[in-house]
Image (tube, rainbow, N blue to C red; front, side, top):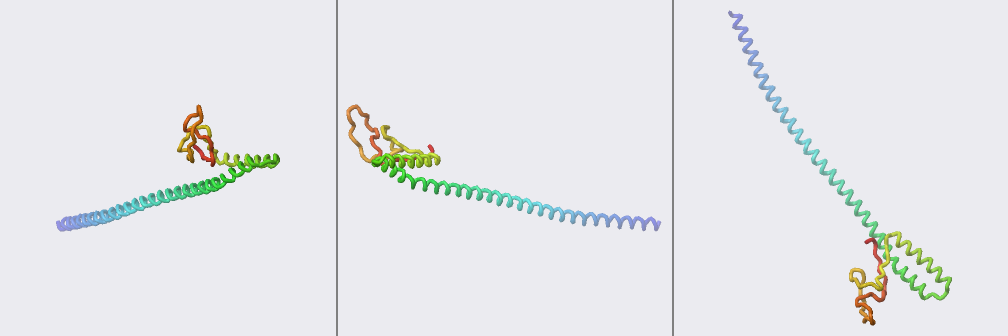
Length: 166
């Protein structure tokens, strides 16, 4: 009987020890789970920040690339615009030139000039004989209409205009 009591006592102690160990394990498991949850939350936050920084960098890269291309195109347009008076002067020189060889040389240079403008997508605007359009030309003066002429028609162009694209 004494042996039975000791066995029961040992079993009770073992049972209490197991329960204590389970409680300790539960506490450890709970603490470990909290740490895991916290680490996962931090990882998600870091991942979110990484995506945001990556997206911001990609936007920055595209924006600077577009700005660079735009500045380059604006520079080209400025150079082309500064060439317009040269073409106008070549035409004036050709009109006033008496020597046929010089006139032929000026015509060759003028054709090359026009090819360069054409390769850049620039075309001359010549509204002569067309109804006046304030979006295309500026009126310097109004002239009276002759017999049978329609009012508002462009009769003469003093300074040529150019357009790029549509």
